[in-house]
Image 1 (cartoon, rainbow, N blue to C red):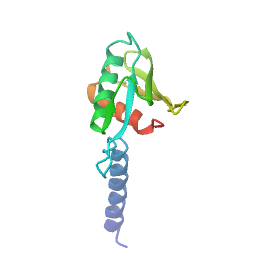
Image 2: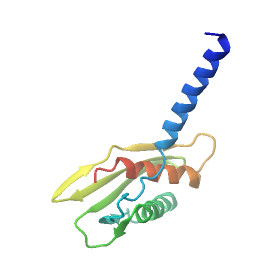
Image 3: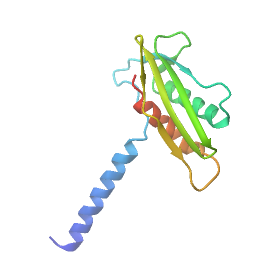
Length: 136
């Protein structure tokens, strides 16, 4: 193999990995057969501050986009747990109450190093990831 071909092949591998990684932050599409997803209730912490309110709004929007009906009195409840030790560091998880059982997603961290706040685009990707790993 000529050296240039190895570089080209390596470039394709890196590009493939980049596309796979990009896929991790995309929202899960609605069911392909047109069926709606289960109705859910989303509970957000009271008085959590601006970032918590923004995250809750983004989660609500994404749930709707994914085909979930949002209803306060449904069997599946999602509870958002948030910790913010600093204005640019966020830890969050979703607790899922369904079928009489409670499951918890792993706690995710969003840290921003080059500014004192969390940009909307980063928070939106974080919301998508939280929903992707939520056990419902």
